[in-house]
Image (cartoon, rainbow, N blue to C red; front, side, top):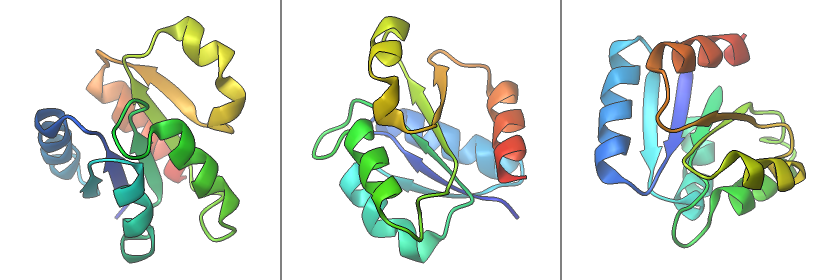
Length: 120
């Protein structure tokens, strides 16, 4: 089973996406910000991480930077799921270090396909 760690500060989106991903056959754990996500990494051992960018305590940019700095987690595929404007993402793309980006509102089936592709 593909394990997904989902980070978002919007509780309704976090719950809805977690329920739908679980129904689609994924193991899903959640975190409300990057700091909580980093704390859960070892216990969850995710195959794919989905993160928002704008979150309190630690945003998605900082989360990805710290994730990539840890040798054991550096290669975990990341999907950024965000409402941030495309121009802003393009300007700061280097900070996402290879993460794939999907913009809100998003197509759930495309997200599922991308998760499966990245989990290989």
